[in-house]
Image 1: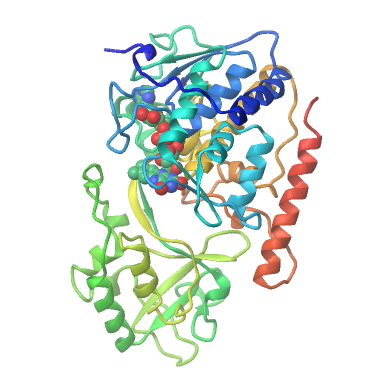
Image 2: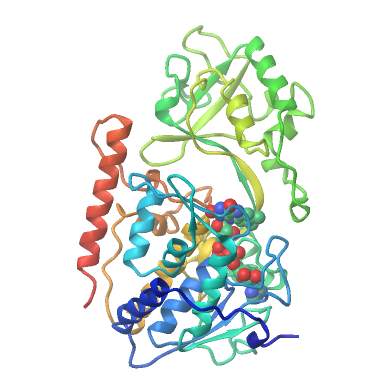
Length: 477
Ligand SMILES: Cc1cc2nc3c(=O)[nH]c(=O)nc-3n(C[C@H](O)[C@H](O)[C@H](O)COP(=O)(O)OP(=O)(O)OC[C@H]3O[C@@H](n4cnc5c(N)ncnc54)[C@H](O)[C@@H]3O)c2cc1C
């Protein structure tokens, strides 16, 4: 039974800094007011949904924000407030030489609700931006409740048919129900995208930096084809494999949450679970050495791990088939036993968890609308971005884009050298194996400059800032 939002005691007095932010955001979005305001339904009041709803409502559109809490909770959500942080309380690094630090700057320049409230509720966390999670969600909720043109409806939406209540009468729908979208809406989405373009599970292998790979041991080449230099290969002797194998099967893993106790498809079993089937299992599968010759010995290695470039610049590599539930510190200890990876720098650790997301390049247009029904847009993690801030950024971008578009203003495309631009481009780039991504320099075009790691980061940062500032200057006034 849907409950009225008035039954939820939230209303807080907002601190002056947030009052000032709201006034500034009102001025910013008021410039995008449209002559023909639309009725927009936003489904899901997480990080993305809150951003979309806020920006569209301030641009004068009539927004209804549907949120199933507190009538129904996903297995990870526990509070009735909006923009709930379900796990860590960190928005990661605030260092402005990192992609995630720069994203914070770009979001602030677009009057992001998430960033304004995060800064107001931050707690000491070194170089990271971490928040008091309860206060963070309470302030977001309070702001949404006071936003003009925004109606909050505490109800689960179970279909995507715009001819049926509660979606009847809406011009547009934004689906931002997140990685743990409720079952009925997931089924409705699968009908529109096709089952094989909607994924339910992430099986992520670790990613390491290219420069941390020891090239005196690791060699380039594909199976049976040494001329193809895309893959790198880490060759094992029998003794090296035995040491690695023992460490792998005895490594400490993350326990599955109840809702994650799902059957793994054979193709994405955790590497340690495959290994536990027997010492030789990996030698006939993931770590098969057939078709390779170690250039140092001229012989076939006993076992082999392949590294696949993770980005166009070949600055980062994926450990092929090494999706894992090992604890992060265990991944570092055990995978550094792989010959050539003793000093591996982990850009991203492996993980396996529930995640509902679409094959974006196949199913979404550039404005995040479904190819199967352009009146329905997706926002947040369900589009194939990964992380709190990336989900918020994706929602903010959609709200900003739609507000401009509906008011007849033409936006120049985001530069692909900006953080936001590179994240949105990731959702349009056709690949054989589309995977969710958080922001990283690897999503951007190469620098084409030889420089040491620290200066490379600074050069990326400088290029990113300049590109975004230039794009900002083109915004319609
Ligand atoms: C268990 C878990 C832990 C995570 N930990 C982290 C972390 O530590 N750091 C990090 O950066 N990222 C983390 N993520 C990834 C991700 O960034 C977050 O899940 C993020 O909250 C996604 O934002 P979103 O707005 O897309 O979805 P959400 O924030 O999940 O919001 C979706 C909202 O939609 C509502 N909803 C769902 N179905 C319906 C429906 N049918 N009708 C109405 N409402 C509905 C939900 O109740 C929820 O409020 C985690 C993900 C999971 C699943």
